[in-house]
Length: 429
Image (cartoon, rainbow, N blue to C red; front, side):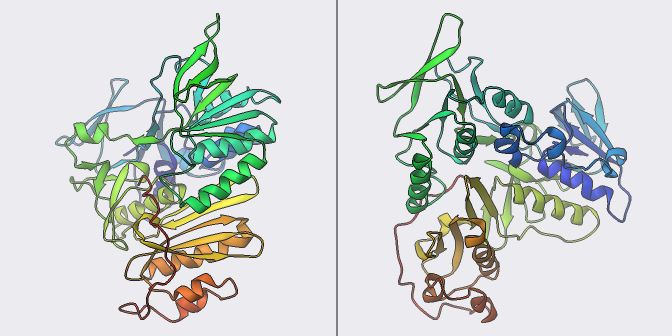
């Protein structure tokens, strides 16, 4: 039984249908839609170029449609671990031999006056994306609260529809908890060049409404009053751990699991955004909110349920597309104490994040996909190999990173890290 019909839960169900051994699969989906991919929500769905059908994880001819007992529009309310049953909000209960929690995360909401108005939105589901898209008209004044990934992707999409856009960010820069200042500054410059106004170091304290109860302006902590026709709030997410906590499972920001994604109850697994899992490459528990992480977790649990000994040791990978730029992150950059910079002639930049002993633990790149994609993937391989790469090779855009892989992995660094910069802020993993 799988609770949660997002990327991780939907992909796991699909994998189990295709498995060599037979499974009886029940998938509980809180939303009224079958499992679908979320990356298109802030792009194609907002722009009206992608529909729900385009986003579905299971293609129309996929066997999962017939092989999975798909329960739509219903939530799980409690887990009876002793009886191995999950109780649902419709009064029914379902027995399980193995249970997988793929309950994902939810958006954090503003609690300021006026934030409950109908033209104040958040973006987490396809229904929300389609509702926001209805208001994407030329000249409309859009306020985005939060300068994180989702807010900036929405801004980039909205500019293609010629909306008037203001981003309000509480920190003194964009993506403060996720990327180094140099990358954040490059992104900020690009958004400003596209006509997006950025208000840093300010918070929305109140949305003022007209006589119809529609929010028409936001009052900031700086004292400014900014007009808006609609607003989208993107100030982070929180893992949906309540079901697991009520069942007595161990939690640590997310549901705590081992490298094979088993919880403190060996009959229950957790995956995707909700899982805080032991990562053998980094020797620590991590929680990763990313598309690729959900895919990897589905693969691992499918392997374990088929009788294997799979573990999740894939180096995390995340990307964000804004305009013609691709922001790509691999590993856990916040574990680094120094960075080595690699810059191409066309302006693309990759920052390699190294520990004090020279081991590479992350990389952050910004540029076109063609300019950074190959080296980011090679950095991911270096991280997986626990490598201590030569900083001179990392910084030289003419050097091939593959040569570092070909050298193998030394037991200890053979050279000092000479290219240092301040440690970047830790991301919310």
